[in-house]
Image (cartoon, rainbow, N blue to C red):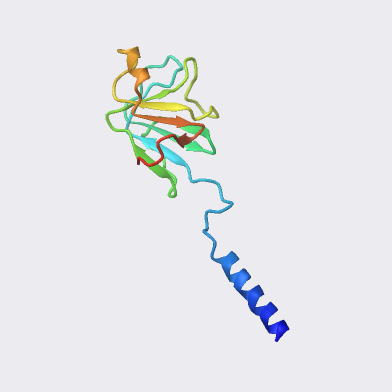
Length: 133
């Protein structure tokens, strides 16, 4: 009887370990910001209808959305009508940079004061207001 209880307990523990959520231990899906106007901090002119792809807290794409394939498992943020900018003065939204950015309702080149009230903030690839989509 004791051996049966040990086997039953082992089976229950094994089943519990198999039923854990599939995301445990896996990297977070990429985050994709689409449709906004990108002011990348490099001095280039703003890019309308841009796309920014973030993986593991780093920017892997920051350019025009023309011809860019969005990963299937990506978490998308619609930035249509918004401006995408670095959240720190002097920072750049370019390949390999830390994904610290603002989504703004207006053009900060026309009105720098708008940087004080971003619509959304991303810090190292994670939205600080994660409840919004």
